[in-house]
Every structure is written in structure tokens, then in C-alpha cells.
Image 1 (tube, rainbow, N blue to C red):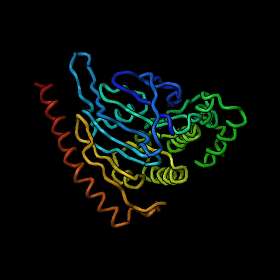
Image 2: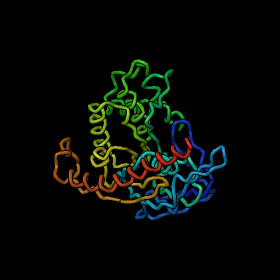
Image 3: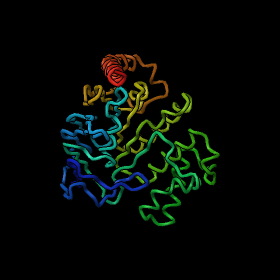
Image 4: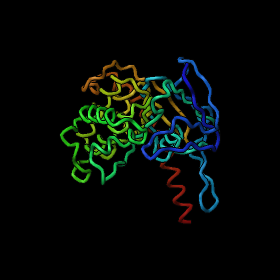
Length: 304
């Protein structure tokens, strides 16, 4: 049996500075047990509304259902402002839902439940590469010898061992993001939450980072929820791709990606890849057009 933690309504979960959710806290103060056949992550009618300073309310998410199995890699795509990142942050406990419930199974209470990797280079400039990667482990109280060994292992996995004593100011963008990825993976979380982590990288570095992430996740079989604007990236990485509607966001399409694993570097040349991309773009294009129309309408109303 696995322990499961639930979040409901506007009851927020405290989140540690290293991006992990404290294991001992559930948002509504109660825990449940789930069988191992249950989803790792389950969203039941989750919604989020923001109140602006002028009193207006903005619906980011309308009631949304989503289930993610243990070890699944699920990507979320959608037009800008559709609530992709809001949904991810709700799962991670950084944002409380206005309504609905998130249930997350916790198979091993000795390990962190979630770790997050953001689009921004979320590493500390006054810490070396090694010290940044070890930050989450320090917060967890991991013993010094184990901390050293785990950091060394993940530095090697992301090809940064030679830079362990270097400060972030001397790193490229791709190297900084590898530091953030290694920090999250070193914590050995059951769930990895990633919010456009490669968006700021040039195409070559982005491809290399995708290949590293695919390789690591296939070997480790972690549950991953990944937000991206790139259909190619989503198809390359994922077991399923979820398309969200224009704001207010909800799940429009949940498409399985039946490409074989392990994924090869040339997966993009597979005819099935192109069919999947066409199918996803057909669904997504309609929502992007609606989002553009809504933005133009809002601009006219403001100018008027």
C-alpha cells in the first residue's frame, strides 16, 4: 500500500526553498491509503481563480480532471495563459486550488514526494555547482557521506563533474539548467515537475538536454509532469501529451504517444512522429487562435 496525500480547495501546502513538498504535510491535514494500482497523481475537478487588485476575477483553470500513473511521463501543451503552469504549481503545492482536489500517492515515505525544475535558472550564485546540487539534500538532513556520494553521482550523470567547484557566473545557460536538473534528481523524488525547463536554451543544447532527460527518466522510471510549448519536445519525451484549451484552461485532448522506448535520437524522423504532431497541432491550433482573439479583444476593451 502507498500513502497518499490530498490537497483540497484553498488549503495550501508549505513548500521548501529547494522546491520539494515536505513529506509530513498534507494540505487538508488528512492522509489516505491507495493501492499501488491507483494513479500516482489524480486531479479531481481542480479549478483556480485569481482575484486582481481591481476586484476582477480571472479563471485560470475550470474544473479539470487528470490522472497520471506511476512512472509515466506526461507533457502539457497549450496556448500562452491557458493555465499550464498553474496546474503544475497546484500539483507541486506552490499554488492552492480554488476548488477540487489533488490526490498524490506516496510509495516511499523516506523519499521526497516532489521536486521542481523551473524555466529560470533557479540556482544560487554564491554556491558552487556541487553546493547547488546538494542544496536539497542538505535541507533533507542527508548525512555528509551520502550527500557527497549522491551529488557526485548526479554530477557525473549530467556531465558536470569537471565543474563541481565552479560558480554559476562562469557557466553557460545549458550548464546552469543541468545543475538545476541534477539538484532535483539528487533528491530522488517520486515525482518530477518541470515547467519549460529548456525553453531558454538554443536548439542544439535543448536537444542534448532532452536526450539526457529521456535517458535518465527511462532508467529511473520517475513520474514526470512536464510543461512545454513545443510539440516536438512533448512527443519526443512523453508517454502521453495533454492539450489544454485557451483560458480558462481545461483538458481538451489526452493523447497517448505509442512510440517505442528507449527513444532514439532520430525519433523525429519516424512517420508516426509526424502523424502525432499533425494530430496535436490540429487540436492546439484552434486553441491558439482563440487565445489570440481573446487577447485582441481585451486590448480593444482597454484602449476603449
